[in-house]
Amino acid sequence: MTLRDIVALLEAEVLYPEADLEREVPCAFASDMISDILMCTKEPTLLLTGLTNNQVIRLSDMIDLSGIVFVRGKKPLQDVIEMAAERGLPIISTKFTLYRCSGILYNSGLRSCKI
Amino acid sequence: MAEYWYYADGFEERVQEQLHNNPEAEVDLDFAIPEKDFNTAGKGSSELKNLLKRLGVDSDVLRRIAVASYEAEINVAAHSKGGVMKSAVHDDLIHVRFEDDGPGIADIEQAMIPGYSTADDLVRELGFGAGLGLPNIKKNSDAMHIVSDIGSSTLLEFFIFFG
Image: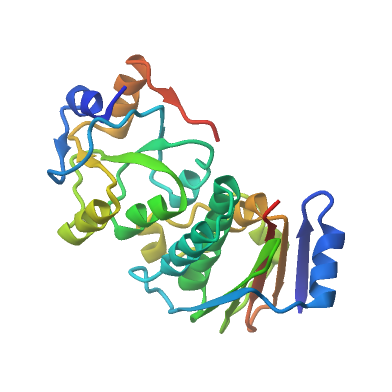
C-alpha cells in the first residue's frame, strides 16, 4: 500500500505539496503517547496520532517513520509542518478518528508493526 | 545516594572494564538540556544520531542509541531543573551521561516500573508521561546506571556497544 492509497482511504489532506506519496508503507502503529511510539524500532512505520507538537516530528529523527497521519481533524502549526518538509517526512490529516482510521487501514490489508 | 545498575546478559565485565580503564573518547559531544524547553529537547539526540551515522554505526544499533538518548533527554527536560548530556564515542561503544540539577528521584525501583509516571499536566499534554522512559532506556541499552536521591541531582548513564 502506498501513501497515496492511504490518502484516498482516509479522505485525507496532504499537508505540504512536495510530500512523497508514492512511498510504500509496510505497516502502521497508532498512539498518542511518545514513549509507546518509540517502541516501533524494527521497521519503517506509518504513525497515526492525535499529537501535533514538534516532538512528533523529532521522533522521526530517532526511528524510521514512513509518514504521519494526524487524526480527528488535527493539523500541526506551520513551523511543525516545515520541520516535516525539511526531513522529507510525508504528513497528512484526516477528519476520521484514530479507531476508524485503524479499522479502515487494517481491513485494507495494512498490518500492525512489530514491536 | 540510591544507586541502580542494569546489565544486559554478558555486558557487566565489558562495562566495568571500560569504566576502570577510562580511555579517552574518540569524539565528545555535549548538549545543554534546559528545563521544560520542548522546542529544543531532543535536538541533542538527533545530532548524536547524525554524528554516529556519519561514523558508520550500524542502523539497528543507531536506533537503539537514538531512542535511549531521546528518552533520557526528555526525562531531564520534563522532570529536572535542567542539565547536560555528555556523549563519549569510543571505538567499540558509546557512553552517554545525563547529569541534572535535581530534584532527584524518590524511588528508582518504582520509576523503573513500566507505566509509573510523575509527569505533570504540561508534559502529558505533549504526549509524554507514559511511564516508559526509563524502561525504554533499559530495553535499548547494554548497561544503564542511575545515581540519585530525593533533593539531590540525578546521574543517568548508559552504554551501548557497536558490535
